[in-house]
Amino acid sequence: MRWFRRVVSVFENLSKTENSTQKNFLEKENRAEETQNLRRQTTDVSNKSKPLTTNELLKQLDSNETASIKKILRTQKKVFKLSKKFLK
Image (cartoon, rainbow, N blue to C red; front, side, top):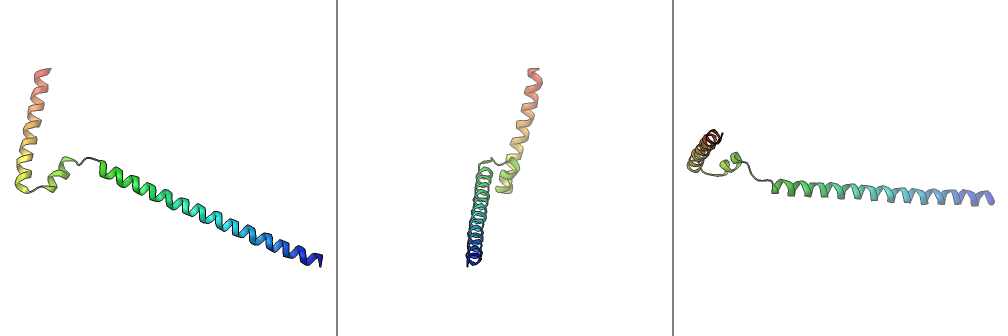
């Protein structure tokens, strides 16, 4: 009868350790999912907070508006270059 008790205790211990390892595995999996979700949220926020470039802004506007804005940008570049020359 002693050997039977030992065998039963061994199986009980195995089932306990198996349950604990399953719980640990599930906890690690949940933590990994949470960190992935947090990373996604932070990248979403960082993507939203980045200012749009000039080309991206121009794509959102009409063709007439983009043409006039491009002219303004060209003149601004020319003025900036000329001011650099005169300041030297």
